[in-house]
Length: 365
Image 1 (spheres, rainbow, N blue to C red):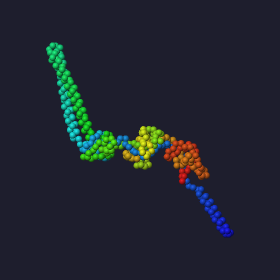
Image 2: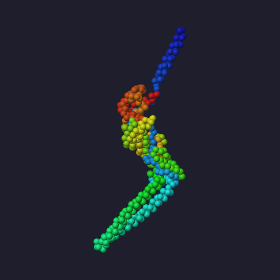
Image 3: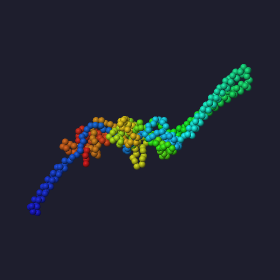
Image 4: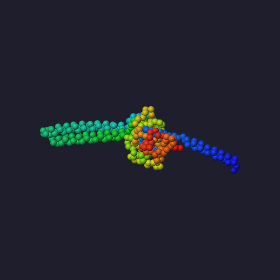
């Protein structure tokens, strides 16, 4: 190799060394995201595994007790009704006639009862007078016995008439009950959600196990609650009365305070799904400007334990083994193993290993 070639090679080596030094110098200056360790509130929580649902404390899918053609439909979807209001009725002219007949029979039975008992009272008085006359030897024994027999017979007739009146009353109640089966009334105050049927259409009862649409779906929307599934692993930590927070997809960013009111006494075994326990949560308060609807999807976060004014670190800053990368005074990252307490999806309590104001890394990419 000539002297000129050696010069070129040396120049290239020097340039490469300078470039590598420049690259190393600038490679070490990496931009990262850090967060400062502060004090605050840390909660231990349990959340639902699948979306929960808002339900009404009272909701009835009402059906007729017997089939028939709809004669009157007194409500529309969205109407508010009071308990006892007539929602719809079936054609029932024959049953109304039987009720009239039973009422007339009852009236006749009452008249017969009064007549028989009045006759019995008269016979009782006649028997008493005959007894007095017989003691004075002014009446024969035969007439006295006859008068006494009439009194006993009349008393029995009075009791028989009373029993007949009771039978007539029972018959009237039975006919009225059959007539009431053709009328659908609201069992509680609420709002009509659905109506399945029109005037003239034939409706049928909904026996158990048969998927027949209800005649009227009635909802009491004054009282609402959330039901949500909780993983069976977390079920043992729950107890009624725990505070909770509810969030709704319909009102993102809004948090509704609630209280855990019921824990199901059994585990749901749904095919191809994790086993869960259903829980119910009652809203503590709902702002007047938030019209909640039955069927809204909801997420629940149940608060098991709360610690205030404790050191805390964001969960995303903690690596496996409770290790964090702390920024030291020389702006270098150092591994620091910490001791932690309770945690949730956002923060983890720091018991040892960090101090307030320490900077830890949150961007590991």
